[in-house]
Every structure is written in C-alpha cells, then in structure tokens.
Length: 85
Ligand SMILES: C[S@@+](CC[C@H](N)C(=O)[O-])C[C@H]1O[C@@H](n2cnc3c(N)ncnc32)[C@H](O)[C@@H]1O
Image 1: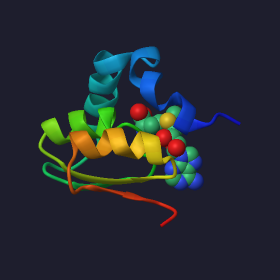
Image 2 (image 1 turned 90 degrees about the vertical axis):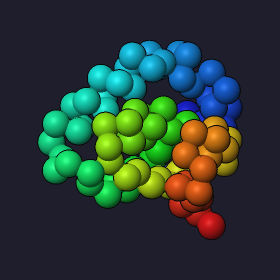
Image 3 (image 1 turned 90 degrees about the horizontal axis):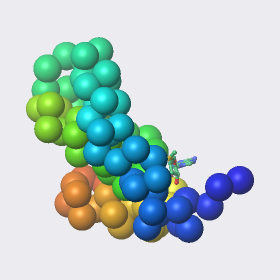
C-alpha cells in the first residue's frame, strides 16, 4: 500500500498539479449547492480542496498522513485535522 507520508513532497507535481485540481473541483462544484460546507475525508495536500474553496465553498478536511496534512494546513489554515488524533 502507498505510504502517503513518503508521497507528500512530490504528490502534487506527479498527480497533475493545479490543472487536475481545478478540473476535479469544477466537477465537484457543479454537483453542489452554492457556498456548501464540504468535508473532504482524505484531503491530502489540500490542492483540490483549495480549488473547491475558490469556487466559494467552505471546505474542511481530515487525512491520515501527517505530511500530506501539513501541506494542506499551509493552504487551508485552521481547516484541517488529523483523522487519527
Ligand atoms: C490519492 S490521495 C488524494 C488526496 C486528495 N483528495 C486529492 O485528490 O488530491 C489519498 C489520500 O487519502 C488519505 N487516506 C487514505 N486512507 C485514509 C483514511 N482511512 N482516512 C483518512 N485519510 C485517508 C491518504 O493519506 C492520502 O492523503
């Protein structure tokens, strides 16, 4: 199984970066009422959640990986928490 603590530093770059995140966020946003409160259950580095927030949604997230979560916390301060603590 993939260790996302090891993946964290190169996750965004190797998974399509911002263009992938914008496309995912646009698809999700099209299915949500405006200004939804969204819980991202595996927020990762927060790259998709950040783009979803840019569509006007309030996004909070949890993740198992401390290193992924640390990157998400930079993008969404005060809006992420560990799912195991
Ligand atoms: C493929 S990444 C996706 C991250 C993000 N949703 C994105 O699209 O960029 C999968 C994430 O799920 C997290 N994860 C896996 N199992 C989990 C669980 N049981 N609870 C919380 N997070 C989990 C991993 O740590 C990793 O950050």
